Image 1: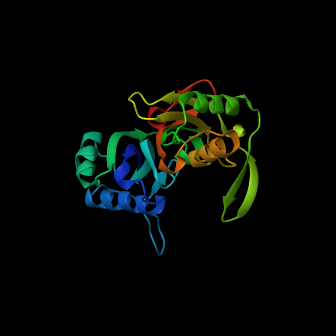
Image 2: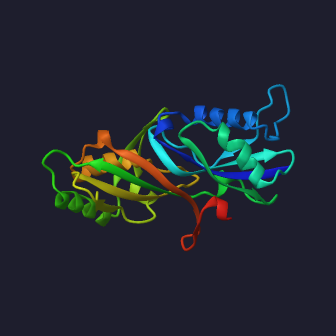
Length: 235
């Protein structure tokens, strides 16, 4: 058995594909590529795939990671040659690496996600007002947000999930838009979604944006001890 780790991208073409459908798409691509994937035993065997962190619907990504268990080790060039043509438009293979037998599962080690959100300013709003809203958010030690899920409503302090202050910069051309940078912890108890942060910024801190037209992109997933930050493919 060999554990193969892949780094892939998810573009705008597949931003509205759910995580379950995305996993099924990857599985079909692996079958078409005729990679020697391993399957579980039992009445209903399934391909041994493991993803680092599910991506929210509507979000694109520069760096997603998944592990595939293979029954034999192929050279990496052969893997890329077989798999790339089988991936649909919007999904790209950026890197592949075999992991040691003792390497931990992706979900157990990935603990940080970074995002960039490009969002138009509200009509008549100016850059200075947006920057002031972000500064006010960053100065708070606690920000309560009502998180809703199928299990019900609960209060969370979203600042607990921030690894760094929220960054902001104007879009470089003459569009009335800003780019917001988020660095969010992934913990065993959960995390916070960038869309939830955007809502809190708009509702609680008066960030003057057209949040319904925000474009959210996950720029990276990392393993960090608070000092060193590495991608899962660098482990």
